[in-house]
Amino acid sequence: MGGAVLLLVIGAAAGFIATRIMRVETDIITTIVIGMAGALVGGLVLRALITVMGLMAGFVGAVLGALALIWLWNTYGTRR
Image (cartoon, rainbow, N blue to C red):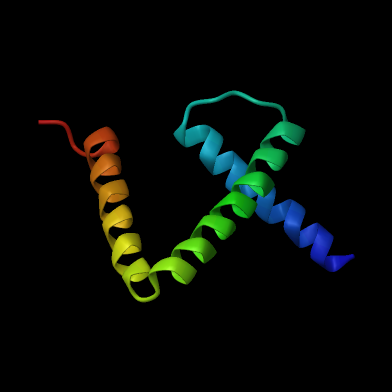
């Protein structure tokens, strides 16, 4: 029971953050489903990268993280 509640809370949080970043208006149920599905897809992709690439997955993750930070900086950072 506790695991299901935790999954709903994490799914709701992840869905809320993702829908706000992408500027999508959804109801609570859709937001939770988006978050839970995103966690599933993200976990599968990460496991596949680690399996296929081994240690190179860390490098790919670092590059993707840097790209995400650059995008966030350009989108929400200080304007010149």
